[in-house]
Length: 168
Image 1 (spheres, rainbow, N blue to C red):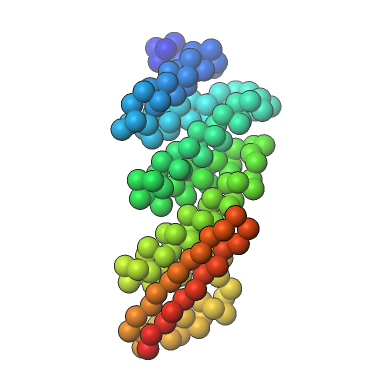
Image 2 (cartoon, rainbow, N blue to C red; image 1 turned 90 degrees about the vertical axis):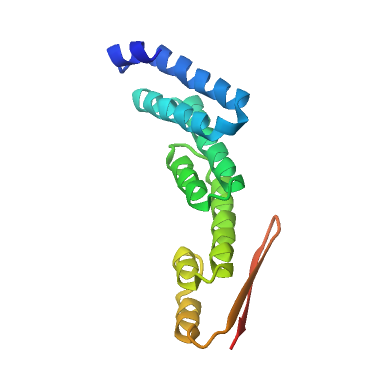
C-alpha cells in the first residue's frame, strides 16, 4: 500500500486501505493503539485534502483524533490529549460541543495536576483563557506569601466548579 501511495500520492483507494489497516492494528494491539490511531489519522487527513467535501472522511478523522486524545489522557499525557483535541476541532464539519467540553475538562485536570506539583505559574498560564484576568492577577500578586495552595475541581454534566484554598 505504501509503495502504491509513493508512486501516486493522490491514490485514494490505497490511502483508505492503509488507514483501515492502521485502524485494525490499533484495535488488535492495545499497547500500540495510540500510535496506530495517529497513523490512521494521518492517512485520513491526506484523503480529506484530496476530497475536502467528504463529510464521512471528516467524521472519521475527527473521531480518530478524539480517540487519540482520550488515550493520551488515560496515559497521563494531558499535553498530547490537548494537542489531539485541537486537531479534532480543526477538522471541517466537526461537532464542537463534545470536543470543547472535553478540552475544557482536560485543561482543568492538567492545571490541577500542575498546581499540586507546585507549578502554579504554569497552571495559571494554562488557564489563561478560562480564568478571568482579575483572578489571575490576584493570584500572581499574592503568590509569594502562600505556603500552600490546593485546587479542587468538581465536574458534573452541566457545571465545572474550581475551588482554590490558599494558605498564607
